[in-house]
Length: 290
Ligand code: AMP
Image (cartoon, rainbow, N blue to C red; front, side, top):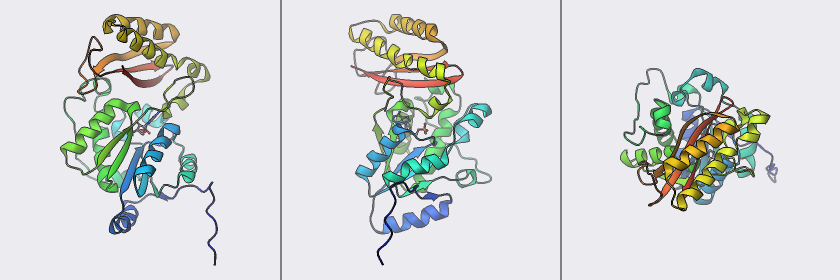
């Protein structure tokens, strides 16, 4: 009998239990297949899908994980308000033919009595780490769990969360997890706004203002490349954002790519990184300078 054709609209297969994931992995590993993982918190957009495509191009099997990790949120309201769109997410992943969408319940990640924290020192003291106490411990802990649970050979992360990418790369090396961390470019809306699940929380009015963050960064990068001082240019950028409607600029820093050290001039490979609040939504972005 000829098998029924698989519909391109079919949702991707969801796995909720670690035991079921392990059963699948056993077969793949026996067959010598490589496994790529794309860890996400769901509310998938084209940025996430670009990571999935990169994983599909490199690996025999691809697992997308969706887990809104309570340990990396600083406030209960932020956790409660985080967008959750599981049915839509599985539908978006269907045409990409991922092998599993792992959507673990909390008990699959943090079973009763869980009391281990993975903490990456130094590079987590600045930027988002300075403004979100405990955030990177939560990220490092869940990512370590996801790497070991999925037995991934390669893991795909966005440069959109540049500091997170550095932290995850470091922990994979330090703990000999046997996974290669691959950083992928930031995908943007046509107006320059970096795609983010949190963009869903912006009001229509705030969505119009939001691309100003990227524009201010581009303008500052131009000034830096013309030899400008980061402090002077930052003050101009912050004033521009406050005029637009941003309320709190947490950081707007020029930092070394290698170790995230603060810089005053773009005289070695550097990135501009920013975090700012707009109408109650925290937006982050970063771009290469030069
Ligand atoms: P999140 O669901 O926000 O935790 O993000 C999951 C992964 O998608 C992380 O590796 C992010 O860096 C990545 N990501 C989020 N937004 C983008 C984007 N606009 N472009 C590329 N990767 C992204």
